[in-house]
Length: 78
Image 1 (cartoon, rainbow, N blue to C red):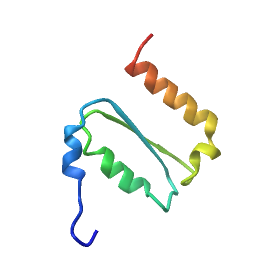
Image 2 (tube, rainbow, N blue to C red):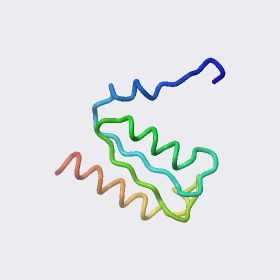
Image 3 (spheres, one colour):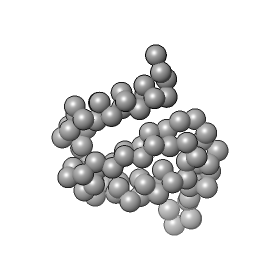
Image 4 (cartoon, rainbow, N blue to C red):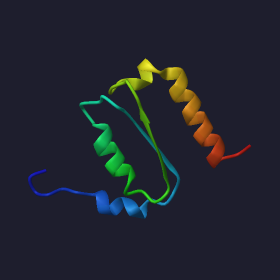
């Protein structure tokens, strides 16, 4: 980190569809930093989940699974 490691500009090379999510109250990987990462991807869908933290997959598993399935169905329609 002290050497200035920053790969954000390289993310623009990733052109396949991406889905990125974060919990509003995550203190380990903040929603703001995750949103910044998402902002460097050209084909991304960003989702921030309110009132949850780092372990939001355990806090709201049904909602998360539904949202992932919805996104996958948009990207890969049957």
